[in-house]
Image (cartoon, rainbow over all chains, first blue to last red; front, side, top):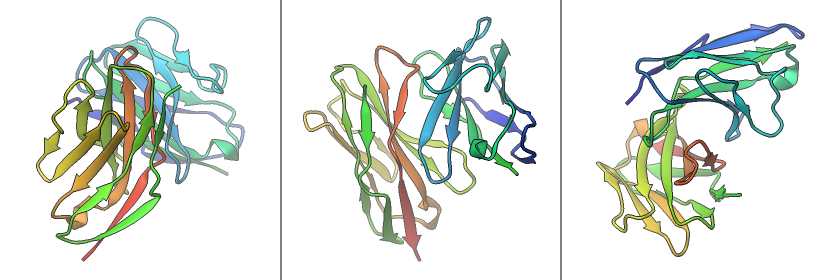
Length: 113
Length: 115
């Protein structure tokens, strides 16, 4: 199964700033995904990161707030822009190849002051 | 839209005992996959077990097994010989067989293991 590394593992940020989270997979994968997990909650899909094209966003999430890059088949970034305390959450990167199960990174715990 | 329901927010089990976590789902699709993921305090989501809807035989992975009742749309996870390392949040998840990109997660069950 794919090994997924996320950086940073956690960060504390000031209101109004932006943070970019990196996700690296140890093998080429077809699909990469970004999820948000608010404290004590389940996972909510933010967007699907497609290589070579724009990300596909779920309802309630927009590109201006969560720009995503997918420059190749092993790497993706998620930026949380103009952060507010409501953005405090765990952000999880996930990857899947073909019809295989999805695997997840360790997550990035983000706190906004 | 598909929904996944975990009705037990928290459960406890004695070490070495057996515990069953419940999950029900709602779908009109005939082709789908079901998963159980474990999320320990370290945050990483770890795949525990998966079940293809077209398979009648219940999936088993060592101490973990499922009771898949397709007609009842039920997918429970049984953990035998519970260990302290099993303590975690457990999420049931549904994936469409027609759109692999859509994962639907339940709200999770926190499992405590008592020594």
